[in-house]
Length: 289
Image 1 (cartoon, rainbow, N blue to C red):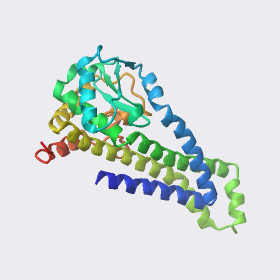
Image 2: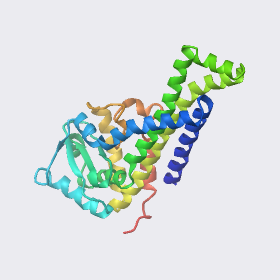
Image 3: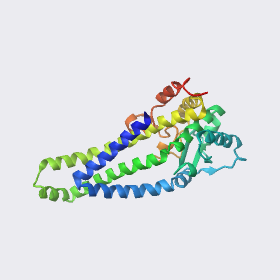
Image 4: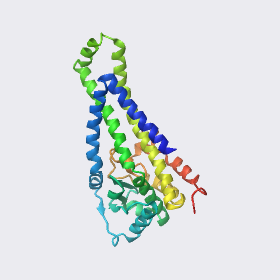
């Protein structure tokens, strides 16, 4: 269901991009903006692991440095059928974790000191399985494509706003015979389309979180560890806000590190924790032993 929802939302982004291109400059405009957006996001996608890990001051650890954590990652990666990712520790007392990397062969899982100090072994397994699910489901790629489409839509709207400011829309409107309806539609699109693109991108992120929860529960063999971890992380993040939090990387974490995410669900990169826990508990008895 979450995969179908993601496909539907991605189709919505493509349709929105196509409509913006047709309205403002024809298919050529949409193609050009999409190519620019893809180029920018391709760079971010290819080097995402290095950039994000460096931003958060993460340090790679060897099996002998964190034997218990590394053993959990290695065991669950085997169950997920993916190569064992590199393991990183972030020196921050706020409990959180994320996965990054362009594909399963070039992936990394990062844990904060806070999450390892807060959770027990079963809960760490649940969190690890969730992050490995993101890698297995190639959510980094999906997020990059969603960002490319949304970015292209916002770039088209921005270009047209500047065009309107300098009189470009007026000249274009005159060439079209002074049709006021076209101008009104263009003005509405410049305002609504970027907002719609952002909302769809956030909805895709939330859908992938639900899917990672379900896939992670199957990798771990039980939803209980992850459900318990999410309940404890909800309180832990509130008590110890994440010092390295940044809006550009907030969607990567297992729980939203920014306090504003819990206030406006439509603009949140994460589903409500209560709903995630409820769905996980609903998986009890449905997973193979």
